[in-house]
Image 1 (spheres, rainbow, N blue to C red):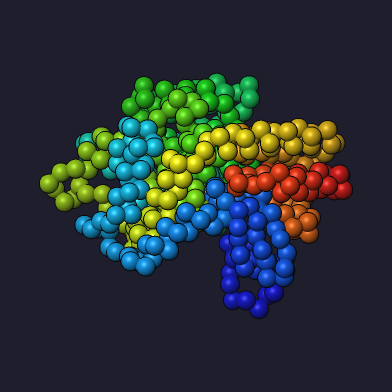
Image 2 (cartoon, rainbow, N blue to C red):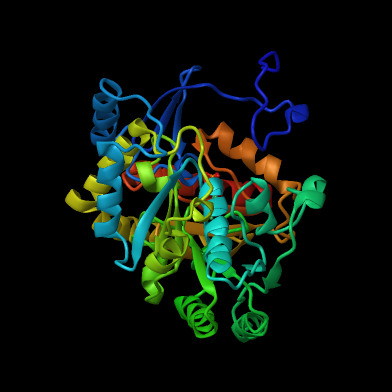
Length: 417
Ligand SMILES: *Cc1c(COP(=O)(O)O)cnc(C)c1O
């Protein structure tokens, strides 16, 4: 197992845990080299929306790969990118008029932060302070880590991270403290607030209500502070609506999308912006252009997959499927709550979570590896965040596979406590 030269992400190789090889994926199921059938309960780290190897997305990739592989995107364009941009304009809030491509959720966040600072500089009132929410996660590049929670994940890199203004997580009953802190920071003319709308993913599937999101948006608007919604995880139906912001009637100034953008098939991201942000960079002066690119910006094959995903949203009853999955999960979650050792059950759209045991929820909680082993032995791909076990399956998962997941969680709760 350890003779592979591969250094895996978020993996402590010193623990000698097995690294199974996946040969094939289909719907909500992975097939491994050692012949096992694994239920993908976390959509392969939150990316797979419609299911693995959706035929329309695979066909779009195949067709594009036969005619256009990759092309410089500075000063050039191609049909798949145009189709994605037009599709997003039709699907997303009309105020978000501009589409900037990049390659991952982290880079979509970097782009959002750079857009915000560019906006203020080019308006002639430079601002650089970013406001963030406690327990947030926005990615693993330096800027994205800077606006995310500080902890064991990034302690070694702390000297590289820039300072931010942090508002508390709006825990039930303490929402006003969040809004008060935001109001206070807004008076110091910050550039932007960046938030994960309605649910903080990597922070532990922490859910807060739409009215708080709406209030945060209102406060930012009132003070003329840019509002950045990082919908990298929450976008594409995860929370029950296409965007989580919808549930609060909120339209952000800048929107980050990635994970489900291609249905989870290949990497791609976009950062969408309102017209004034684009307009602030628009000039005959080349020094005001938006200075960001990566070699593979808007790769045609990735764009073809994203265009196919957008077509699926247009043509298939995805919203109904998502709503039904929410109900199917809610019933199973309810059944779990009678087990002692299962705490704080919560659900938002297709995301369900519980805490197991009474220990604190720290990411490195000793329970984590035991749970991972337990679920692995039952052929279920679950990856608890500390003692928080969450289920976030592809929307196509069938009842039998959903049962397998919830039976595994029930068995873990019963046998480990
Ligand atoms: C996963 C995630 C990111 C980072 O996306 P990557 O594609 O892994 O770089 C950013 N923000 C949120 C909310 C995420 O869940």
